[in-house]
Image (cartoon, rainbow, N blue to C red; front, top):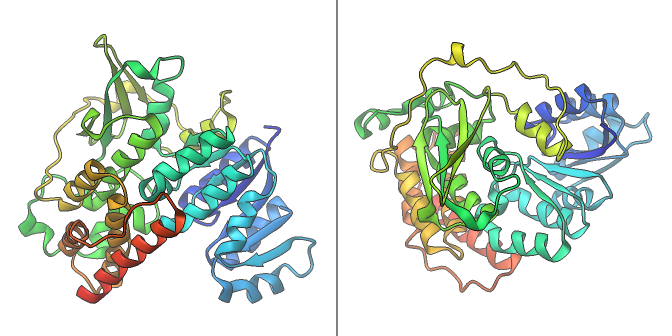
Length: 379
């Protein structure tokens, strides 16, 4: 792969798998960024020899600078440094930063005309109108990395998007599918982090357990594929073989299938429009056996209903729900909030007095702050 890639969030689950793909394809790394895992970031920097590395947490600058003092690698720190790295010339920027913190880097990459491989769904959840407008204005490719959105993107190759009737967005259901609220009331962080099919970071794993992840992905799909929320139908598919599907106006349904391995959509985004041999295990439908599809329960999983309602309202409401969820998940993982309270906080965000939507980044950031402050005040 004769491409230079900048990887943001390089020490997380998606970031490390991206480097697996780059290593496999003999690609080059232009830049690396992480929040504060300086030990792993140093190891990655020494292997891939990027021109620049950045840490989002300024307190981690000294340790990384000292660790790489014997190299020519430029070290910087702070959220603005990560965004600046996204704007440095590269063949592609893969944004795997967790949460709304990735939004500024998304905008910076697009402004710099760097092809964007987007694994940071919160960029589109919180600032979808702004991001898609920026991509259109700069004529910069934006390629989805989430397995579901990559699947939809692949199903739409060569198709007229005006002929989309329905998007079938699949969900694993997480570790608690089929459980009622009485059971969910006593769920611990350790239980929530045991995903049955995927190996992911802590935040997204909890989002999968609450089904918030699927609500966020519904909002993301609206922006990526220019569809209304009522055109997206969520199907719980426990086997995680069908990654999503598209139904067209003539009744034909095209689906994308594969093993539960994020390196497949990551590699497709990095090599698009080409396809290359993968590290992933080939799919055997004989081994997969029966494939089942069920409806989610928005009553038991109130995060999902909050996200769907925010999607219908549009504007700043998805940002408010996302901000409340991010703050609540952090408190849950710290043992300061119950599992069901995450959904309650997301629902409460729908009643916040929000500022008027003016299409600006500052208004998005203000909304996020309001939602987080609400959660901290109520916790």
